[in-house]
Length: 259
Image (cartoon, rainbow, N blue to C red; front, side, top):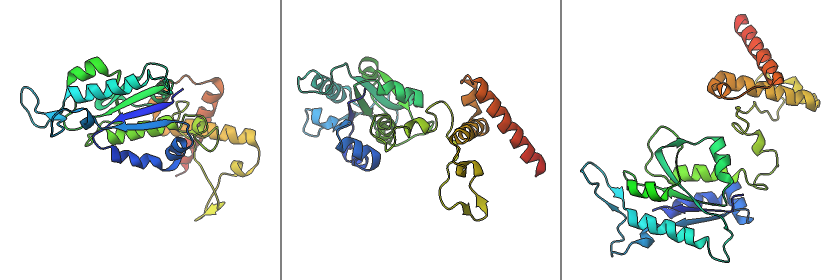
């Protein structure tokens, strides 16, 4: 189970945002340890240089190997200290637009490690030799370009902390999230019962928990079919799920024919 996350970033102050909400409470309550390390602390020149021009020319700058490598090794060696909460080998994750797209399954897999070191790149990226020798996994949060890896790192941290027992208010909260079981989440409603002529589905007011769960599963399947049909292609539906999905599709078709 995940016990500690370390981030290597040129902008440690950005991670103060994680002191709020669910992530903040989890850290405050000792459910997870979070550290942020600045690679400038591992430079040897008076300017604390962490970047240089790329060989072969081209625009932009690259993050140098040595400060990042020394930061990673420092954090890994901390794992071997007697008072460390980490006992297993660390995994180094590089947040990169060239990495594998982040999914809930990957979040679950990463959460099984005791210690993660997240590398937040800047500029045009990092020297390829660092990735080849010191990075275990490259991860992307989407097909777009950001100024650095800090925001992707925070996204990953938030997703990881949600899976830690006790981090959420209700034990079942994470299990009901979208993508947890390969489906999008069902619709949610709260008071008032009627809003601008639109009422809460009667089944949710019935008190019949079995019917409510069945309705939620059907809506979850249907919403996934409508918005992310690709998720259904990689998920084997049970007989009950297939019947509920067929019912949703039929009802959806009937509504369209009435319009």
